[in-house]
Amino acid sequence: MSATVLLLPPPPSLQKLPIFLPTPSPHLITTSIKPKTSLRPILKPISSRPDFRAWADDGDGDSGGPDEYDMDEDEVEEVDNKKDFDVDYDTTTSAVIAASAVDGGDDIVAVQSKSFISTQGWDSEKIVDYRINEEEFHKICLFDCDFFIRKPPDPDDDVFDFREMYVTPPDTDIYTIPRVLAPMPEKYIRCAKSDYGCYNVTEPPIDAPRDPLYKSEREVFKVFLTKHYRNRRSDDPEFMLDFEEIYIIDSKTKSITRAKVVVTVPEGKNRDRKNDLLVIRDNGNSFKIIPSDQRESPTSVIEREEWSKTRQDMERHLSKLRDFSVSNWF
Image 1 (cartoon, rainbow, N blue to C red):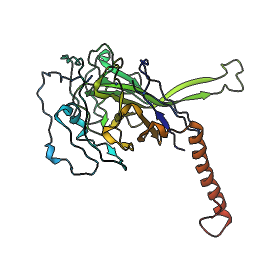
Image 2 (cartoon, rainbow, N blue to C red):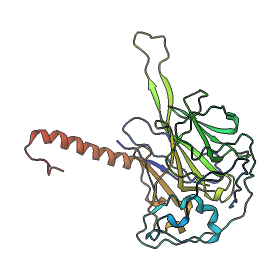
Image 3 (cartoon, helix red, strand yellow):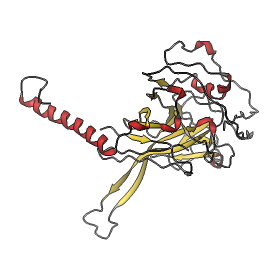
Image 4 (spheres, one colour):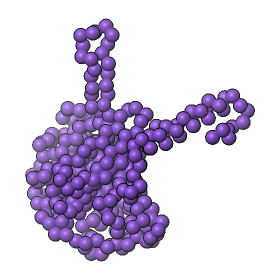
């Protein structure tokens, strides 16, 4: 049974994002996050180490697709990783055009760290022979592992540097290079963190009536890092989330990748992002942006999914009682 999560931008007064928590039951859970929306140019930190990274020519990428759009020079801040990972715009009523206003804002201060070590290009699952200062990293605790992402100094504590990442077994200091399954941004970006997991509730044993009645444990299987649109601070009046750029940390595979997001809003990139509704399905593997006016109630979604499953179960049962494959009962 698949799970569906609906996200809407939060009101401006919201400082923290709610956590959407699917449960292991067959019922679907829907959660809405309404993003609140100053372009902050981001400065890359100066590293004392030589840069041995290989760069690909822009001409190597595919071009000419019907859903691509031209970007003006004001959008250079956004082009570094979007050119490697295109968003699928499913536009049916109008063409996608590139028109975006540039807002001013404070820069994210680039601070050179003496302990910075770029792990990009390293072999995945390679154990490093040194220990890190965990206070300089965002520690993301999942069910099967702990994930560490470099944390540049910032008052909001929401800036991520994906050039240095590690993964360890829970509560250990054996640091390993994680599996990176998609191009990561090469600059500082602000992200909102939300997890995808469930509560494991166990009942007390029958032969131990004095034990606690129930025991609940939080199990986080995935963490979603959603980029702030144009890296605006969460208290900015024009703050909103960029649902087109979501990074997924997977507990089971100990990997990080970028979500493949399908945009079904007719206006495409020129849409009003404050009205975006993000639908997450298939256990956190399918992402789609739809207009907020197409939002369905959780009850309707659950009823539709349960009816589909009931039909499949009934068809499977009836197929044992007849000599033809498909029934016309439905």
